[in-house]
Image 1 (cartoon, rainbow, N blue to C red):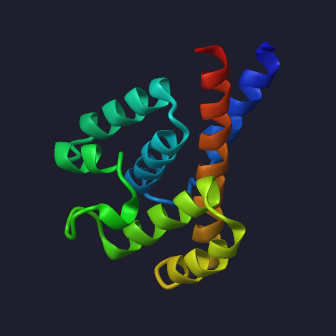
Image 2 (cartoon, rainbow, N blue to C red; image 1 turned 45 degrees about the vertical axis):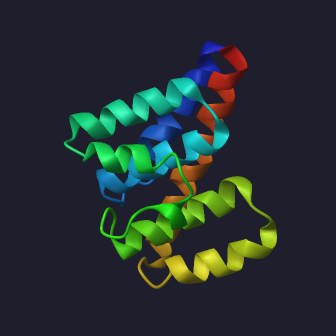
Image 3 (cartoon, rainbow, N blue to C red; image 1 turned 90 degrees about the vertical axis):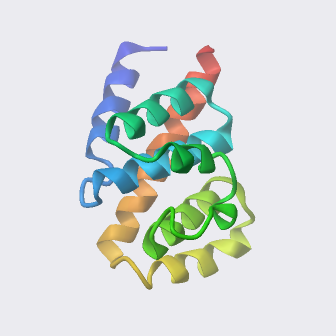
Amino acid sequence: MGAGFLKALERLDGDAGDVLERRLRDLLRLRVSHLNGCRHSIRLHAESLADAGTRPDLISALARPARQIRPGLVSDGEMAALRLAEVLTDAPRALEEEARAHAGEWFNATQLGAIVEVVATTNAWNRVMRGVE
């Protein structure tokens, strides 16, 4: 894998979702990494959340579908963003419109775009890391 590609992906990832709170970006990255089965990224993002003081039960809960996360662990907006991330990563296209509309109740168009950025770059990193594991 070329160093130029990795540097470009790092730059892209650094800018992805910059309008979102760091906690939400990290929640999305961990959930997407679980969906993709990327052990390296799961460990990296779980540690980042733990270092930021995220509750261990929330970090563990992100291994399960968003709809199974216990009420109160995340806000309604975070739940909608996690569900959109799941649909964008690993669900039939028919569900995208519904998930996007629900997330749109909590996030403006710029923020929705930022969620897509975080999901897209995390998916890219997961595929790179799984390819070299």
